[in-house]
Image 1 (spheres, rainbow, N blue to C red):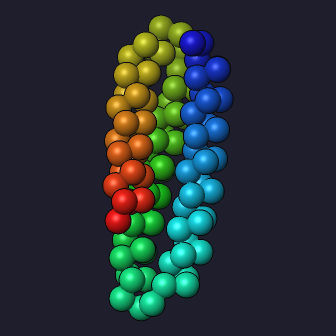
Image 2: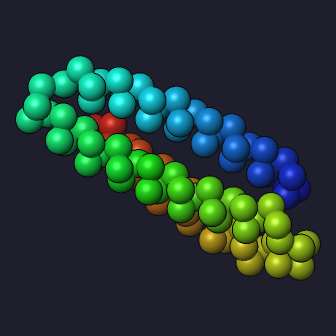
Length: 92
């Protein structure tokens, strides 16, 4: 998969996660006070992971072809970390 296709694919995933964050924010607003704090913590974790991934994606997009292979490994790790964080947050 070439870099541009890869970056577009990852951007689509970020859009999905942003939608999920918005859904969780709506649930947070509706939750009782004790649950609200838990939702807020989960949301902050999800946003931090998303932000870290977006930074890696920016690095990938801005990289030259020679550096792409090295950066892709970092993007893949950030992707796995974020996916795991989102899964864990959704299970709570």
